Image (cartoon, rainbow, N blue to C red; front, side):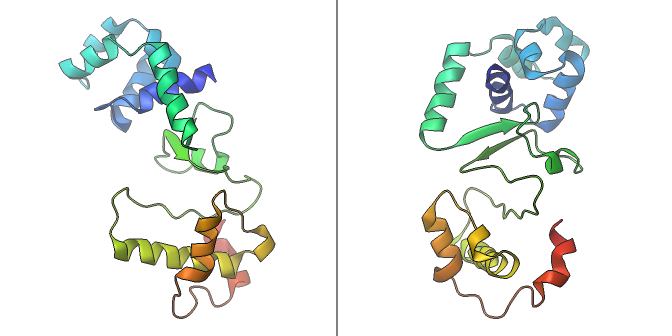
Length: 181
């Protein structure tokens, strides 16, 4: 848990994106070492602005970070970083994997095929309709009904019933298993 606390802190720092996080990991190691590490090492790296150095030099207290994580978890949102054993193994080995995931429900079983539909925070109506249609078609054509799981029954209802999509995305699901492995 403590390890994830520092990973959460690092991931949620405004202005510290993937490139800077990677540089920090090269300099310090893991997120906890970045949090407690000697910030004079940042002077040697041209990647960090003065604002970044100030932000990293005066981090929030552990108590403040815990409070933010607890508020998030109370809303049913979980956090998992690459530093965690729970981070999906299949994601670790893709090019440019995400440093962390915010998710609801459960992470997928790594021994089974899985599909994710990922979108932006502020999508329009049409984009949501298309994504829901894809999700419904994928759910209906690739997985037996008893294997479709959702932490929110409303999502499953929408995927199966509410958004009809003409035609099938996959006409022969068994022939398309290689597409999602």
